[in-house]
Length: 117
Image (cartoon, rainbow, N blue to C red; front, top):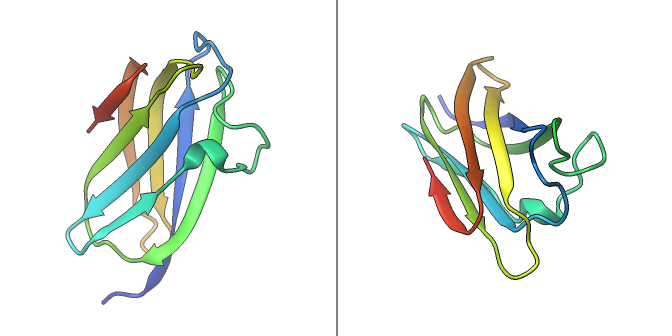
């Protein structure tokens, strides 16, 4: 059974992060029935007011068609001149209809044109 649901992401940045301007960022959740993409996150205003502050959590959400059982999360970070590396520690996703929570440990620094799956 498909339909609209809410996908909520909690994105954790390490306290070791340098802060400052972040690069173009896209996250894609892929499931058995489809995918949902969070695009141009560097321009998004999160609930807490500041995007990817060092040592903090940033909460984002999006309404979308259900994607079924979660298969993977892809993070694309495309830095250009003047953008700072991003020290990502963890991403947690919750799908509202089923209440399913998925935890994606990251624990790495993204500094250029990188893909994290």
